Image (cartoon, rainbow, N blue to C red; front, side, top):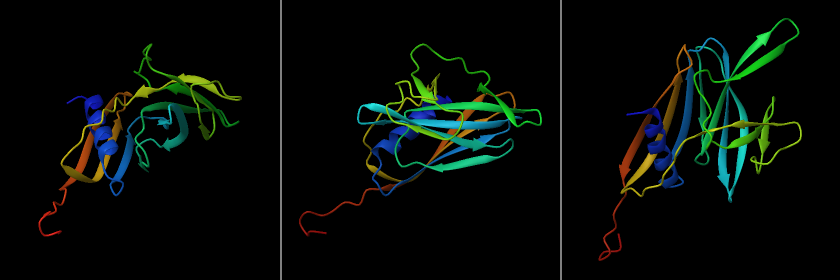
Length: 176
C-alpha cells in the first residue's frame, strides 16, 4: 500500500475518531541532514500553517495531533561554516505539483493563520497533501500513530498503526 494511501487512511481515522482518541505523527529520519517539518490545518475555511518541528539525522520526532493536518512540508537543513548560517532545501526527491497549495513559512518557528496569503517576513512554499477523506466506522479508535520514514536518499515511506475497540452498544429496553 502506498504511503499516501496509508496517510489518507490514518487521517480518516483521526477525523472520524471520538475526541478521546490519541493521535500521533512520528517522523523518523535516516537522512544525513537535519530535517524540519511544517503542518497545515483547515480552520474555518482557511489554512493555518505551523512549524518547524525538528528531526535530527538518525532520530525520530513524535507529535501529538490535536486536529487532522491537511498538508505538510519537509525541508532539509545544511549548516554552513562557523557563522551558523543554514541552507534549506525542500525534501530531496519531492517535486512540487501545480495543485499543491503554496503557504507561508518562515525561517524560524511560525504559526500563520490564512497561510495562503503572503505574510511579512515569510516565503510561500508548496505543501504536500495528506489527502484525508472522512468515513464513519463502527469502531472507536483508541490510538492512531502515523509514521513517516525519511530514507538516506530522501525518499518517504509511511505506515499507520491503529488500535481499535468496538463502540459499546446499549440495550434500549433495559436502559443500559
